[in-house]
Every structure is written in structure tokens, then in C-alpha cells.
Length: 385
Image (cartoon, rainbow, N blue to C red; front, side):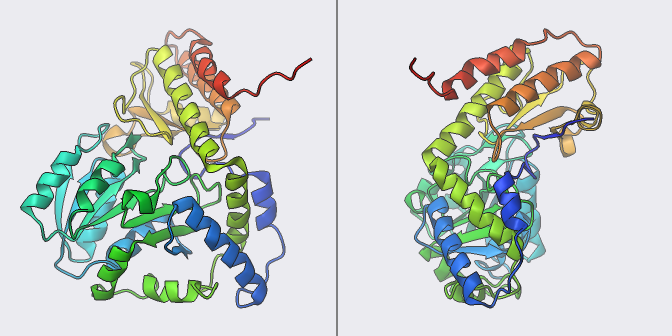
């Protein structure tokens, strides 16, 4: 028997109580019962996003929310600024180009964060820019961009700041209203501890004004139509009912833990993982701007990228490999969502044993021990005698 451990940055593990919530008998979505459940869930989502705006629930992947963000705030021929520092920054550009937008790009070296000054310069040169499109946490490179600093720039302009928070919302404090984020999106299969299939998007008042004038074609992703329905505690189209059952429970778990505690847990797990990687003498992909969601590391010389498949299939521990230019070169260890201290111990032990299995020198226990030193911060106090 091989016990499975899911430590990739999405999908992430799903708590047992969430699985049970999704397994309950389904009921019709055009009923008072669904409306009551949906109303409670929508209120909790506002608390998670830290916004007074409606957080719109879509039956789609996170990319659906990204597309909805673009098509509801622009017209063909508008100019947008894309921060391209990874696979998902590239996706912003592809979505925008697909809808006839003029795409200006700030190319950022993979593994580094964008310099907010570069965004300020680009907006001074192109003040007609409608959107700045950026990731909070770029999952492919494990980089955290400085959203708060970027928001300070866009708040003083007519440009909207559109943030992909798919591996950030629920991982770190990203208060939409306080920071001045104009559009914030996320997906269900990350820190929200659900299977894939739901996406979420919230717009500021500034963004809703832009949406009123936007002329991109849209139907399923018409956010005004969806908001009008969701304000009545229903949805424009058939919702993913069982996933919403699970979402209701997942949000209950997050708020029972307390958001500040959730953010502190993610920070602690991330620091422990990075400490373990460094203790093994391995190089971090994002040493100066690491995401608290996922840690990327360069594989040591002589260890091929197929170690990720070996650990998954033969050992039962699922990490993520590299994408595009990082393919075969890096490994990504996730620490977001339903992941705790002993998952990180397992991750470090698996990494050490995998390196040893490929015949490379490694001191077993060194990475585990370094991670444990930090994980001790989260250990409960010993009860008094």
C-alpha cells in the first residue's frame, strides 16, 4: 500500500468535513433552501475578500474569472498593461489579446517580482491604459508580487488594478477594499480547500463604473447579470450546487480558525519549507520574493525532473514540476489550504529520500530538522502538570 500525500499547488487536499458536505443529498437551486445557503456563503466570501462589494461566484475554473475580469471592464482596442513574470502572467496577455486589446507587457525575469516603479513609468507613458493585470502569487515561479505597492500607484489614476489572487486569497492578508484592488479573482481548488470548479471575482465601485461602459462581447461571464441575480441569493445559470455546499463548510472552517491564524499558519509553513530547502544546500527559485503559497527549488545536479513523477507514483507524495522554461529543472512544494506542519515534515523527508534514490549525496534529516525548528513555533503549549 502507498499512502497518498497531495502537496501540489492545486488541486490541494480537501478536508473530510468539506467532502461530507458535498456528499449530502442535492436540492434544487431555485428554492428558499438554496437561497438561504447561498446568502450565508456570499457574506462569508465578502469577509474573506475583506470587501463590501459582492463576491460573484462562477461555475468555472479560475481562468474563467480571469476572462470575466477582462471582458467586463474593457472594449475592443483598449490598452492594457500585463506583468509577465511566469506562466500565469502570460495567460493574462493571451486573454487580453484574444479580445482585441492592445497589450503592453512588462517582462519580468522568472523567479523575481515586478518593480512597482516599472508599472508607474509605464502608466505615465500610457495614461490611457485601462487595466494593470498582475498575479499576487505567480504559481509557476513561486513569486509574490508587491500588490500593495502597485495599488498605491493605480489608485491615483483611472487605470484599474486587476489581481489574480488564485494562490493568494486565503493564504495571505489581501484586503481588497483597504488596498484599493479594483478586481480580485480566485479559484476553489487552492486555499479554499475545495475541488476545482468554482471561481470568484469581486469588483470595486471604480471597476463597476468601467463595466457599465465596457463593450466586449459576453454572455455566460456577464458579471452585471450575475450580480443582479446573486443579490437575490441565486445565480444567473445553474450553479455547481454540491461545490457550494462544500464552500459553505470550507469558509466555516477558515473563520473558525480565524483569518489571522490562517495567514500566520501559511507563513510558518512557507518559512519552514524554505529553511528545509536551504539546509539541504538547494537553491530557491524565488529567494527574494517568495510566495507563502508554494516554494520552488532548483533540482540538484544529477537529479532529473522525473523525480517528481517518481515521488508521485512510487512513493505517493505529489509535488509539482516546472512549467515551460522551468520544465525538468525545478520542483514546487505547496503549503496552502488544508496543509499542516506534519505535511511539511513529510515533504522534506520525501525530497531527501528522493534525492538519495537518484544516487546524489544528501544528509538525511537535515532538511526535516531545519523545517521542524520553525514548525515548533506552531506547537501548542504543553499542558500544566
